Amino acid sequence: MKARVYVMLKTGVLDPQGEAVRHALGSLGFDGVQGVRQGKLIELDLADGTDEAVIAQMCDKLLANTVIESYRIEVL
Amino acid sequence: MKARVYVMLKTGVLDPQGEAVRHALGSLGFDGVQGVRQGKLIELDLADGTDEAVIAQMCDKLLANTVIESYRIEVL
Image (cartoon, rainbow over all chains, first blue to last red; front, top):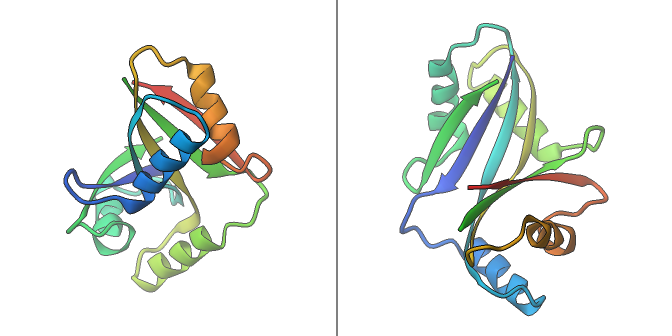
């Protein structure tokens, strides 16, 4: 089975990487870019029948820093 | 308007970051993780009415390295 985990910085946490992208888009002539946030997309290839709770444990322990990041799990 | 861009390494391109995550998950006792690929998730806050073709240009010029990465655009 496959699963996707989306990890984003929580609202209010400064995102210098996203800010750099926003600035670069402006420099390239793309107007109207009001904000950019950059996160991670992790595709997992797991043993069939892996419980979503196990994936959440993976996120809590390794994939996301839950102090500053939130995550969303999508089982495919 | 908001849009999300998902950037992943193309199939066949080595992903050492994903491989490191796979190994770390195994070390933490998560069995059955057969593969991990790590990509980027970019959330854009754009001027209303921005065309999807413009977002594709942003991807081609800056957000993705189309030699080794593929991207998918989702307009919210």
